Length: 441
Image (cartoon, rainbow, N blue to C red):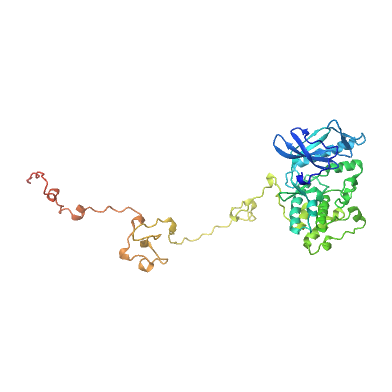
């Protein structure tokens, strides 16, 4: 799951050879190999993509056959422990498949074969936090650390809500992806079950990062969210100071650790250093009890909003006059008598200028309103108001509110006695016979 440039060159006899097929997956190379599993780079022939396949392979409990790919325990004495670890590996794959967060591993599928189990994950490219810090000449700045902590705290909160705890947070288990956000690697659920069964839990702990409750399960020191927060505080201590804090068991007897509030004063804010010292409390009750508490101490905001149930959907604020009576504080008061307000004459509201049609006459020009209808605020009409004089004031045809009478013809204006000249007299050159004379009787 790391960058090909940082792949492990070591290859033990328990790893499958290159070119081996696991269903539709073809193994290309070995990315990493640890005490409890092997991670391969593979090619998915169905979806045509690169994936990472993790195989459950505890080298201290089992070995692989040289003739077949089967994995068998070393002896019957460790067979039960091997099966406990196998069930925990499957449980880890089921938990990861149920999570959906960019800082948590995503599992495509898992299955059991060859006496062991496999899980298929995306092929992530990046470098571990430990390698990135070793390449720096000075400690990282506070803003960058807060950004990484914000992503990791959101991912841990998703896990803790499912009652799942990482228990193995360390700089080499945090992958800085090329996209910029961190990714948690190597969940330690299977390791805890194996450690409880073999009574050798100290062999699977990282000194300086494991809190005291991981060394022995006691009723007064149970593991919980505070267990991962201690390891996360140790990671920040390593990034700021360049070394891990003393082992938690030794601090329980005599705490010789110098608080980061003193050791890194002046380089980081007091609030940031105070929150890290609180997360590094020796006893579980001396640390933040939840991710939300540590996030508040750091002054961070939750990046991924939590989903709500259908019955917990928040409603938008409503105006006071439209609130339901059940939510009104004054709903129990008797209704007040209506107040009678006398009517007052109000001037007729004029429509806005944009609602009127522009005047298109030659006298108006490009004015938005007709100058013949210009009226001042005081009601004065005429030259004093900037309009036309009264003698020239006439309603424009486009401003008519009712149709006008048609214009009179020439005969109507001349009157009933006067008649216009006849058509014959106006055209004497025509050869039309005259009309017969009619005598009146």
